[in-house]
Length: 296
Image (cartoon, rainbow, N blue to C red; front, side):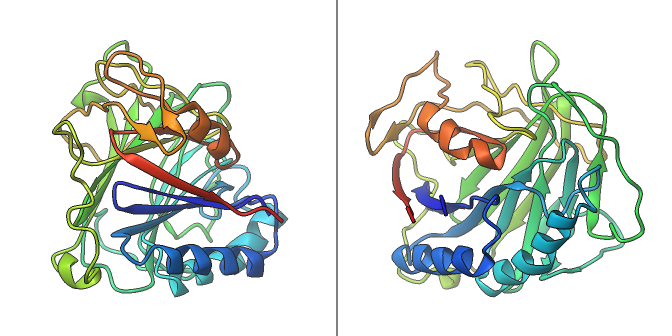
């Protein structure tokens, strides 16, 4: 099916080949990956065809089929977050319990101690600006907490600690990205992290060289985008949630060898290639990556 997984900075990443519509095979693959990594602090799934987006693909027949099948599996397996592309529009959901949005009165920038089975979904816009799809204001799109189509490049940085996941999406069409370029930010915070992963790896964010937290940068189309050495150069669509602070990635080492570097930023070509089907580009902070691929 082309599914594969890797661990990075205490996170189990599972990338699904969403061209394969066999949900039972995807589920079996994820259960196997989770069983093989009992010490993972977080579980993130990536794939290309967004099940929760708001542009021209949101009501496609194949998308509706995936939406009716995959979210129930993600909730059953207690996935923390799902990162997607395909629809070239920025969408961040409310927490989803299967296909049911847990709608709040206000857009949350921090989610504390979500219950088992509650999953956050993020759809990235174009990282290159090659094309954008207009938002479709359909009544069934009640899952969207944040949606944006500013027709500007964007990237999303994922910062990882033992007890938090922070997703910050930036506009990247400026030469220098600052806090003014933040489109959206949301943090999943655990106050009981020790109980969530008994016996697990302590502080999945401890990185040689003093940096903290891994980073993943999804783009809304295949191939994603690179990040400059003096800070993230992400981008997006029109936004509604703004946070302060800029971020800067460092180097990384993969199981197969040292990855090439540009300044003190690093883009992992092998990771970008394998994640292209999900519409994602990955930026690594110094840490060993273990990768497994399922071949049928």
